[in-house]
Length: 139
Image: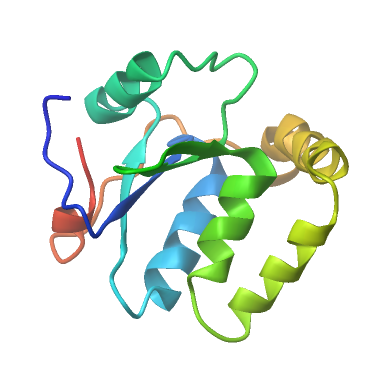
């Protein structure tokens, strides 16, 4: 890939025009006390490159992905739960939902993802990080 990701970081890829996704990114930033996550919109050059490298069909998976340099890609409910489980207490309690089979978790996830624009709205363009947060975003 044409960009450097520190080995100790994980990258959250998100739909940059989705209000729910942007709010989720803001939530992670606020609760990521160990500064372990970086971010990029699926629509960014870095996002497109990761999607292309891992041959991800964005017509089927278009809301959130978790990229870990040494482990690859997690998506849908698995990505969301892995992110939450890294945020400390009480967010890490979401990890208990891993006991639910993925086909059930992903059905719920897909239902929310399918309706996210209708329920939460959509922006005309991807969010622009503040100068303080710019180093946490890949472009």
